[in-house]
Every structure is written in structure tokens, then in C-alpha cells.
Length: 90
Image (cartoon, rainbow, N blue to C red; front, side, top):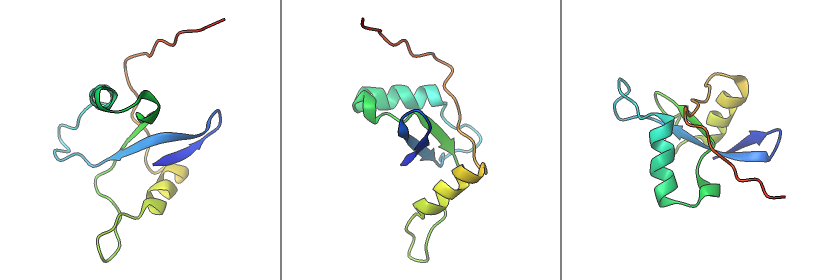
């Protein structure tokens, strides 16, 4: 989902509900998995882990509630430990 970002206006974020909350994947593992399968600009820049998704009575995920949780600071992003090297061109 897109979330607000001061520098870019909006960035890609992933909200993950791990199947095993006791041993969730790391942001580095998730980034590597996505990087192998999708374009770099589509790979999430922020990773949020949630215990459950807020849903409607019919079972649809309420994305607006997830955005609200992020804006209110109820959930914080997990950061990657790897640093990304960016090539600079003059």
C-alpha cells in the first residue's frame, strides 16, 4: 500500500501478518524475496508487522484502518539491516 513520505510524496509499504508470529521473516529476507521477483521500484521501502488485519463483516481488509494505524503511530516499520548502495551519476 502507498503511505505518505516527506521526500517522495508516497512510498510502497507492506503490512505483513506472519503465519508464525514467534518467528517472523526479517525485513532483509522479505526485501531479498521481493527483489528477486518484482521491479526494484515496486519493492516495499517500509515493512510493518501486524498481528491481524482489520476486516469488514464480509472479510475484506480495511486498508484505511491500516493507514490510520500507521499515521497514529500504533504500528512502526521494521528497518532493514542491510544498507543499499546507490550509484551516483554526475
